[in-house]
Image 1 (spheres, rainbow, N blue to C red):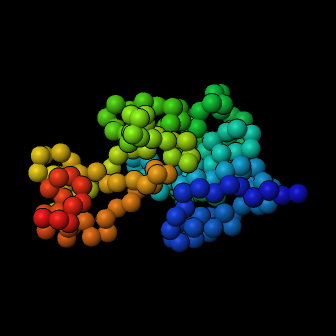
Image 2 (image 1 turned 60 degrees about the horizontal axis):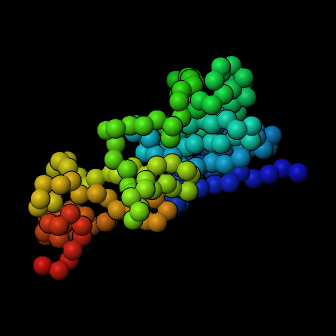
Length: 183
């Protein structure tokens, strides 16, 4: 009996369509080797895709390169450290293994904290990185006190951006650093 991978984080119709299009290129046996598929934000690609394989391995790629998962077994058998993630791009026909991003500590990143002061973890088990709004001019938006204005996240660690941020920012509703429509 074939199994269907668990999907997580594909919140928009566009993301689901991109994923479906890339998975069409995989055979039933190749799909059966995938345990979970997560939308995974990377510094260089905010819409990366993380595959957790049934053998415990990981592959991180983009939507356009997701079909490279069909090569996972041959790439995985060549890797020396099975705890590493495999990063792959189909366009350049490249794959390499390195420490998985959730195992790296990056002091230049800020992470969301819960009300107990613990780092917020999303449904994929990843630390939730704080991202900041930018003004329409391209500069980082700042509150009246000079602090950067954070894009809020929901209880699952997914960003919930203000779709009218630039208008609200220009109107002065972000002086405190959070949206406050009372003047």
